[in-house]
Image (tube, rainbow, N blue to C red):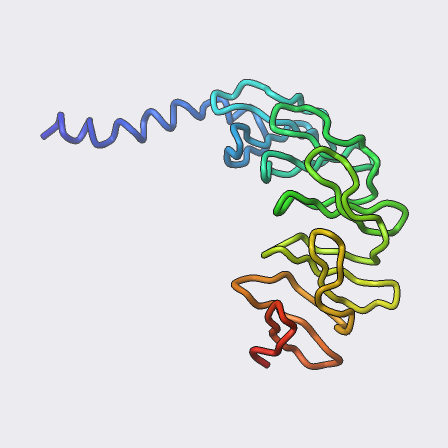
Length: 193
């Protein structure tokens, strides 16, 4: 019976032993794409599952890897790195979101656009606000402050007629037209109010 209990508890002891390195950090996030986001002395970096530093703690702010890339900030500027620490873009954005469906929304000179995983501008910086791509579409706000949805080529597939728009999830998106909250499908048909 004691042997069975020891075998049952072994995974818990191994896990606790394997995470001793985590105590040296102020913050440790879950492992994603082979690395964990860590924070110490107000600087962020990334370590592997054994706690070895993969990407030095040099960032003022950083997020967990998404699609193998992370958004990082030094001073007031944001940029992107990959899970090996390679620079994907310079630190040149005023704000930046995580990658979703291969593109990330970023802001330059007060306007939002999208970059791809190679760091190239995919959609020009022309939007007042932007959300991540979900289900092939992204909600964006035009210069008249109305929201619509674009595809990955930048074509408006749902017109800019909404006062607010959220991402698509499960085939529908929550939008506001005036004071009315609606749920629309990708054909811009109201499916729920």
